Length: 580
Image (tube, rainbow, N blue to C red; front, side, top):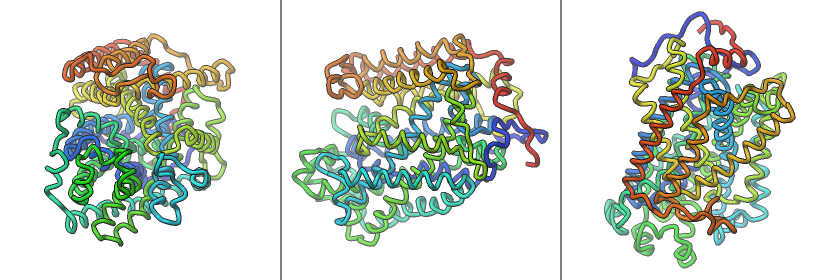
């Protein structure tokens, strides 16, 4: 990819936030921001969750997901290099298609980021509960936090807020140190487990390498529902911190690309190590891979219950690697904790970006005089995170909300990429994606595949969250809480509603996530039951691919005029940056 790097213009860089934020984050800080977010609770729980859906063929699911996410990361790398802005993911569709599209994809971005911190808190507490002194924090029988566990979660969220308010430069140094541990321990676990406790026959045991009767479908389901996509969230965190980058032209693209490549290799090795190191007797007692997380099986087998509380901790314990189990338990606090800490940081930058674009009240742009941290956004993000702990008091219950929001957030980047290539072809691009006109629509199709594989129940939940966001932004606009309120640019976003509705129609007639709307919870269990497979497995994806191309090229047709893009950029601020 060396040929894709262009020399930045020496005169100026597009700096859309001026001097309001602290520009003290270098390449390693940006890299570790992404890498530190990638390596959180996903590796601690994803290997078991994916294996319980697809068996050993989950390895294939990780490889497919890695290819898709790498492509999306390359799209983000070009956009991030062009616009070194805080909250970049929420702004790119705004520049290309105007107010309505920017508000829609910006809201997806924010919900995804704001809910990661509470998920990581839940993950840390769940692993901690494997220790006798912390067993009262988590109720394994119904998979929820206890009252004392809720108070522990509140304390951890408050701790994240305090660290964020210290300042970005200090936070970057702290996360750089923590990420060395976060990256090092999974590598150590893979090496030790493969060397000491690797059972090659596990790959053909428990029903075989593939799930009988659902060979392909189980792999596709595992990508969004097995924690695989969730584990790979985070590569865009360097983009979100773009406004604080010391040398964004050089550092942003390299940080994004490097982080996802490193994580992709590591996650595949982690899955292989987990499958090979699992105690064969435990797999035999479960009979099949899909029974490893079965509630009835867990009630009958304490070892299976312990496996689901702390997958790698239990694997190491049964392998007689007590010292590794202790390190894994420590990592289960530090690794998710570090990820949650970074997401409190970056989600506050997303609200900063949404406010700068005029969607949210101006209060979200308030930064502290000394550390220049958007403190109001940090406080609101923490409050939202705590609210999500009430209806979703466990990792497994909240992860679906985050995954569904994130995949829709990623779908906005290829659209903005394609439009900006047409609108501003001469704008300096520190990184230019080779074959961009071909890879951008392919990336959009892949992003929509992930949304579709999440299932009908998940998609309708996402649309319910979308309605809530529309109401909140509408209130801000109606009360004129931000003088920079943008025009909605309805023509530039004429494709948005057909896109969302069309995705819902295909999901309804498809064969993923059968059940009622909004997760089939309560009274919704029998409302608009979809996902019954009216479209065959291959026909559904063909229909979705064609539909995605229609939406993509329709969006290109109705993109904003180049002069309108200039107005969008100028409305935020353009300022020369000295010395690169």
